[in-house]
Image (cartoon, rainbow, N blue to C red; front, side):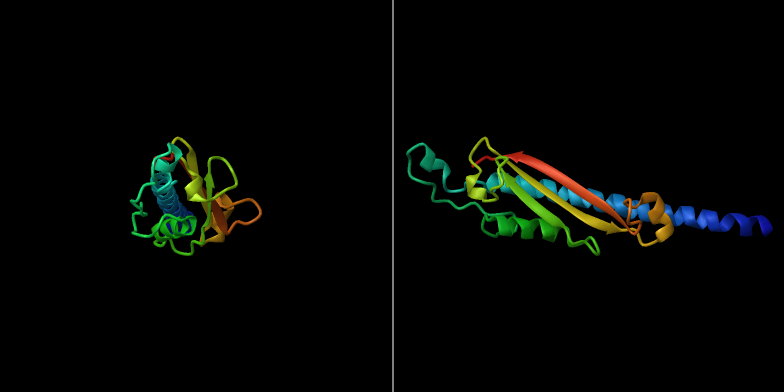
Length: 156
């Protein structure tokens, strides 16, 4: 009984730490998947309706949509990525879209062969200050910054 009383707090802290680490890893995977899906959707959407105009032909009359059925705009793309992250509790991700390495975020500027980058980050709460001292960001042991970046080649 005495040995258990001495070991139990450390064992409990270790088990809770594993649980919190598992949550953080699962949320990182979810973030990476959402960003990758967003970059893929942006690459398919980019320049939709303008591809034919470059070669002198009439512009395409078909309109490409995001997988959720919304029009191909940057605001809708950000909403699409946020929807994918809705299952992560307490997540308020910062999402950025960069087209062709420029500060432009207009998906219409993503011409075939160009690139679109989608990045997202948020602060993952660690729930326990003791676990936070091991896994948390420097200066704030209550959170761990998670981020993901994906790049795709524009197709339209």
